[in-house]
Amino acid sequence: MRSILEASKFQIVHEQPMSHSFNLYLGFECFHKDSNGRTNSLAEGLAALLRKFLPWATCNHLLFIGRK
View 1 (cartoon, rainbow, N blue to C red):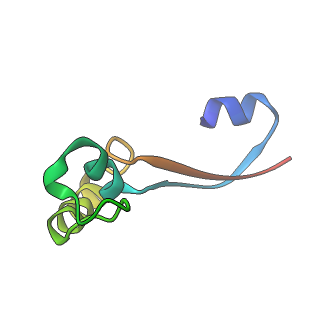
View 2: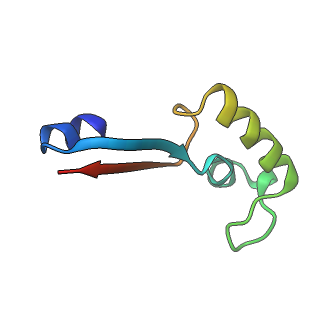
């Protein structure tokens, strides 16, 4: 995504990996709290570790803020 934005002449102001617990929700039913996409406490705890140690490799969404 970074290279696409830079190729389009955007200056990256901020970038952040997001939604680690939802990625677990999508992959494993044992992390479901309910059918509305909410994750249980186990998923939230594991997501905190993933955010800390593997933030870009384990996120479900990317947030980029750019300026043109």
